[in-house]
Image (cartoon, rainbow, N blue to C red; front, side, top):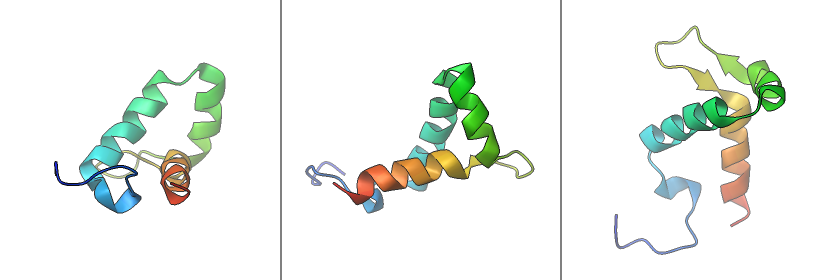
Length: 64
């Protein structure tokens, strides 16, 4: 939505965009960081999920 201006909140980001970023953040992370992200990885669903990265993104938006 082009009418929304910064600072953005978590509510302004679609679930699809959040999910895409979770996957991208995991893939671009260093091996050491991926080891931490692996603690929150859920690959049993149809769409892979990672609650560690999801929480991190939520936390960043929370204080904007």
